Length: 235
Image 1 (cartoon, rainbow, N blue to C red):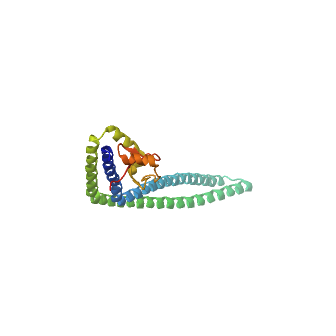
Image 2: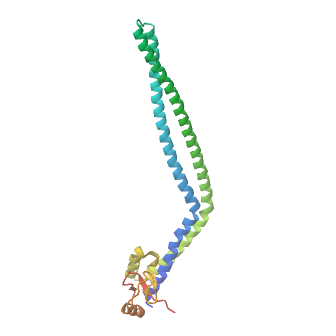
Image 3: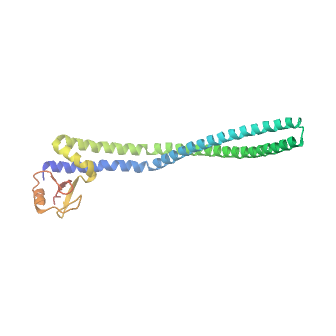
C-alpha cells in the first residue's frame, strides 16, 4: 500500500477519535446544559412578567387619574348644588352626580383588580427568581462534579491531536491539504475502505479500471463518484 495512503488512514482514524470527544463532553455536560436552557427560559419569563407589571402600573396610574378627576367633579357638583336655582338645574346636576359616582365606583373596583394583578405578577417574578437561584445552585454543583471528567477528556483529545500532528509533519503537505479538503465535507468518512469493489462512503460500485488502479496502490486514489479517499484493506 502507498506510504502516503497508510499515513492518511492513520490520520483519519485519529480524527475520528478526536471527533468523538466533543459528543463525549456534550454527554457529560447534558445535565448542566438542560439546566442552562431552563434558566434561559425562566429569565425570558421574568422579562415578560416585568413588561406585564409595567403595563399594569401604567393602567393603574390612568385609573387613579380618572378617579381623581371624578372625585373633583363630584366636589364641584356638590358646590354647584348650593347655588342651584331651578328644578331643571338640579335635575341636570343630579344626573352628573350619578355619572360621577358610577365612575368612582367603577374606577375603585378597577384599581383593586389591577392591584391584585400586580401582586400576582410580583409573586410570579419572585417565584421564578427563586427557581433561577435553585438552578444556579444545581449548576454549580454539577460543574464541580464534571470538571475533572471534562478535563480528562480534553487531555485525551490533546494527546490524540499531538499524535496526528506528528504524522502530518512528516507527510507530503500536498497530500495533507488534499485530505483536509475532503474532510471538510466528508468528515469522519474522508478515508474509507472498498467493500466488494464498492466505495465504503457512497456505496457505489467502482468500474474495473478504477478498481484495478486502486489495487496497484501506486498513489492516493479517490472514488470517482463521491471523491472520498479509498483504500483496500489488506488481508
